[in-house]
Image 1 (spheres, rainbow, N blue to C red):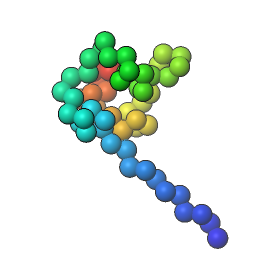
Image 2 (image 1 turned 60 degrees about the horizontal axis):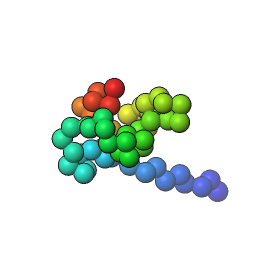
Image 3 (image 1 turned 90 degrees about the horizontal axis):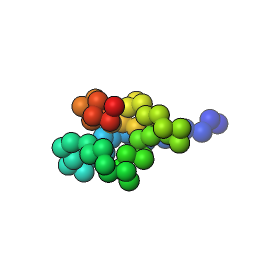
Image 4 (image 1 turned 90 degrees about the vertical axis):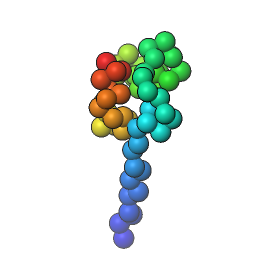
Length: 57
């Protein structure tokens, strides 16, 4: 029997926490969206809405 994979639904963390604008000085928040090499993690992986993904750029 094949094991069923559970796919966790992605959600926008900024919308859930009520953040209106992304603050570039908030390092603790930003480190969840950046790889160890300094590249941005795509929105299709993080679940971030396009409005906030553009602010991360």
